[in-house]
Image (cartoon, rainbow, N blue to C red; front, side):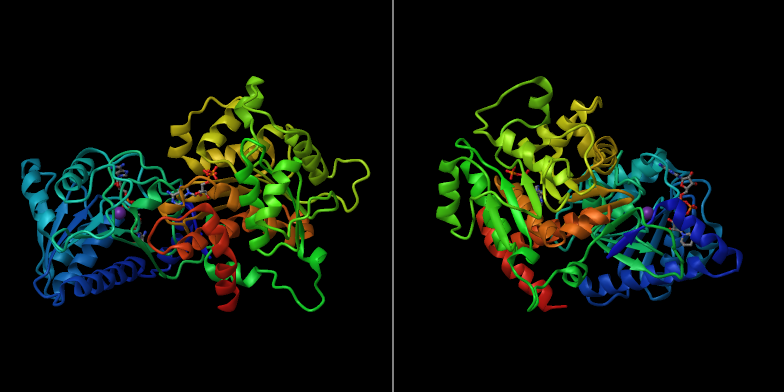
Length: 534
Ligand SMILES: NC(=O)C1=CN([C@@H]2O[C@H](COP(=O)(O)OP(=O)(O)OC[C@H]3O[C@@H](n4cnc5c(N)ncnc54)[C@H](O)[C@@H]3O)[C@@H](O)[C@H]2O)[C@@H](O)CC1
Ligand SMILES: Nc1ncnc2c1ncn2[C@@H]1O[C@H](COP(=O)(O)OP(=O)(O)O)[C@@H](O)[C@H]1O
Ligand SMILES: [K+]
């Protein structure tokens, strides 16, 4: 698992070490230089004579970059450091000059900006040491100008670029961000202004949340964490599950298991208008290893489900998790406005009953509360307050509607600009765990947040969300009681489902388009690979 800490926590962890004279900057800058050397060697062969431009800001981030530049100059690389502020890291500059590096005082002669940009565009490597965890807001003054100009000049990069071109020609410089790409929201992943998209980010002590969270996560390139000896004890601000975490906690059935111990998933999905959602959700739940899947819906849709998956049961009975809403009309906005966007075929009533049972509010329900996945039309069926074992699975549009239905004046671009904040707000307003779908899936539960970036862009296809709902339903059913008892566990299981779903999409057709049903069919193979490797 990757755990990310806010800037203030990293600073607090640095303080006692700095007070004790631990050479943190030497550690950081030496590791940074080592990674740059390795990358340059891999791309160019000989490192001697390679051209490196270091963009250095006023603070210690600039200090790291200048000291790394000194190490590189000492190895025979031609290093030019560009100082953007009158205040700069004095020992870093001195070390660089001693090692034979050249310094350009851009702050003293802004007219040389175009020459700097030209040199940067021709460099083998570009180190972005403008600001690190001391950044406040969008890049200002010369730091902003230089990033804007270089981004415009380097092929495949624009100043506000969200997706760096993965394989650029050999001519463009290899961009290494020092600690973080300068100008991102270190704690929240915001991209409030120009940011130079990196090929690699070498981050010190621990990842920062902004490296995991969208939209900034798309600008980091590969993230390398350098251990400089910090002790970060408190809870991380954001986490990212890795395959080994999911493998370790996967409930592999043993000899004593039977279908009810493995978990029964009750699915309220699909209508005559959207029968495919019922097929996709139930198929995904079956393929993800549910002990049993019960489909609840009209007879006609049930026939389509049974034709695709004869394992599915349509009779009512006990379940260990509910999935309510895929392919059911009437999301939060419609419910809020009293609209009706199509016949619900009785699914609203079945969905409400499922959610009431899941919340433990249905008189005469045996076995107590169980987890629920609440998707699409199910989001309009929620009560004012939900328990944390309800996992809401909106995309950005649905989350916006949900928030607006609860009085927040928010638009979709706001949600896309600050997904962690708004998923967190939805968690606060509803009490439920919130999984916000997107290129990076953000999950917020009580005291925990996850950011998962496991799937290819090809996964953005109709029905993919229904498959996720089915996979998550099966995973929650398998750990039903535990999820109800431990408020933060639903978020971990939801993040794990996003990982399985995203990796199944890669597996379904590596490097190419995927259809939602193909993703569902790849799920058991992905699970086998995960648990087989543990
Ligand atoms: N304290 C230490 O010894 C260590 C610090 N480390 C490095 O130090 C960095 C933090 O250093 P600092 O606290 O000095 O802060 P930074 O170097 O991140 O930035 C602070 C400077 O940037 C300017 N600045 C802030 N926001 C700006 C914006 N939006 N546009 C333009 N300029 C802006 C500020 O005026 C300030 O002078 C870390 O990110 C890391 O790279 C590492 O070397 C580890 C050890
Ligand atoms: N750019 C992207 N890269 C990777 N995965 C994505 C991207 N965009 C969306 N996804 C994923 O694809 C799925 C789409 O779900 P959703 O929007 O609910 O579609 P539908 O309602 O048609 O099923 C989600 O799991 C989401 O996280
Ligand atoms: K930086």
